[in-house]
Image (cartoon, rainbow, N blue to C red; front, side, top):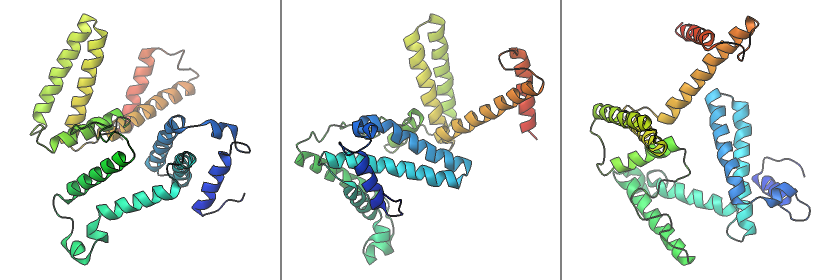
Amino acid sequence: MQPSRDISRLIEIMAALRDPQAGCPWDVEQDFASIAPYTIEEAYEVADAIARGDLDDLRDELGDLLLQVVYHARMAEEAQEFAFGDVVQAITEKMIRRHPHVFGSEQARSAGMAKGMWEKIKAEEKALKREARVARGLDPEENGTGFLDGIPVALPALTRALKLQEKAARVGFDWAAAGPILDKIEEEIGELREALSKGDVASTKDEFGDVLFAMVNLGRHLKVDSEAALSGTNEKFRSRFHHVENALKASGRSLDASSLDEMEDLWQQAKGVERF
């Protein structure tokens, strides 16, 4: 088996890895559920390479993510459900269908993307998917019939909160401005304080979630993506803590042997360095 730029070679490699007799024992025993966490992890690693501006890593991580698609498609093919080619056909059909202003008739292209067209296309896709589920003898409403039921549960919680709020806003269920949301956040913090004072663990968890949800809503109105904002703060925290660690190491001390006051002083130094 030799490497190749042709996608068919990757498909062949996966088929060989999944071969019950001659394949890799680990790969053979996997299923959709056991592979799903790796798929999510690879998507995050792609995003990480992009954030670091490392195009060499991006190339490799995109390959790892592509492998996940091939992996799932191979398992589906073994179950006689669909193959990699069906995945490609489905996405090409979707992209063409969703861009009539690019791939449609001359009249459609000249008209551009009319207002409401995106929602119309999505509704048509939903109807087609429902028909396909019925044809397969499946419950067409398995994912729920509510207006918000189409938002995937597996999304990161902050991202899902944003998408739930955005979709609800389409039908007018939304704050008119950011100001009142700040009042709502203060209200939620008050309820969190009350739950804490009572020692109510379940209520504390619930109220903490309400605070986070309200903060995502504020970010949406401020045009700030909560996931991206928190990611930036995470990196800022890592960088400052690294400064503390290096400063302690330079003076012959360790994190474990240092007091909180010492670390706090170095933390403030790190913040001062950032300002310059």
